[in-house]
Amino acid sequence: DIQMTQSPSSVSASVGDRVTITCRASQGISSWLAWYQQKPGKAPKLLIYAASRLESGVPSRFSGSGSGTEFTLTISSLQPEDFATYYCQQADTFPQITFGQGTRLEIK
Amino acid sequence: EVQLVESGGGLVQPGKSLRLSCAASGFTFSTYSMTWFRQAPGMGLEWLSYISDSSDTKYYADSVKGRFTISRDNAKNSLDLQMTSLRDEDTAVYYCATGSGWQYYFDYWGQGTLVTVSS
Image (cartoon, rainbow over all chains, first blue to last red; front, side, top):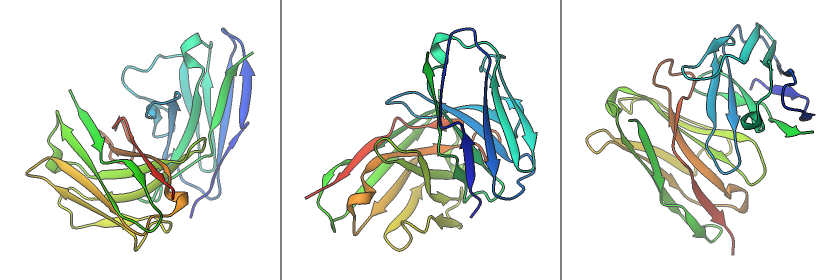
């Protein structure tokens, strides 16, 4: 199985800050990576797919980059609604996919 | 509007069975593969099972292989997950999901149904 490791596990930031979350794969996955946002009590929401493609309707302050084993999700200027938990998902071994453990983004 | 609505969750004793359902609407269900995920309380997301559009291909996570069975009825636009020999560690919110564009990524999710396994 491909293991996905996110860092940090949690981060505190303020509205307007730039935040970067990293996801590392235990082996190369090309660009087969997605990022999701999840708020308490809600289903995950797809933000980024194919490592860097922005899902329709997602604000442009979200961006993704990387390939191979290292990937990043960047939020350029945090908004109040962005405080949530973020997960990466590898699709290289679809349909047997795996997620990172999650990064909790909290208000400072 | 695409909708996925899970049902069937509840409190069940260890060793018992439960059947979850996912009702789909707003898209051509028969042309999309479907996937079940779960999320234990306070934990991350876990992939459980996949079924192809025609049901000819099914996959299961090791954690549920031999205990859970995925199925679908394209005539009824429904997806099921039959869960047997339930364990305490199966306690979770269960989600059905699909990818409308690239099937490898999940842009449509249900709201989830809570399964609690406890005596």
